[in-house]
Image (cartoon, rainbow, N blue to C red):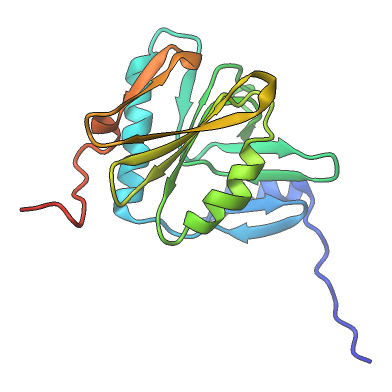
Length: 194
């Protein structure tokens, strides 16, 4: 009978040290390390628009946005995960010398063909376990549409949909609101008329 060797799990310390010198971002799930898929220019622009808009709205307030370079750490009873959200807002931040955040209030994931399946299943489910999370925004990159999962007290999260460039997502949890026109600024949708 053939024996298959299983790779040894990577320690959290080795993962974090490896990310410091890696040109590719990796996500970490209980000792397994996965290279992240590349996103499109629209994906990157929407992510930048979110951080830019929220940065202006949150200036002088206790919460602040972070780019996709800030990891979020999620602790499960039996393992740890690290993901790179496309954007996040943190009101109770880790020290500046840390390499991750643990207490995001808002997480934004931009969906495209290469990330949609993971973002709508594994990542969504993981993010919704974060005790500090108030709102998860899943932003479509192909049309002006956002699916929000908003915490409703002890009853978990409820879904809300926002669509069209005239829509505005209220975010009273962080004393702000996010206009889809700002989120999708300078994005040319495929089905748009010339």
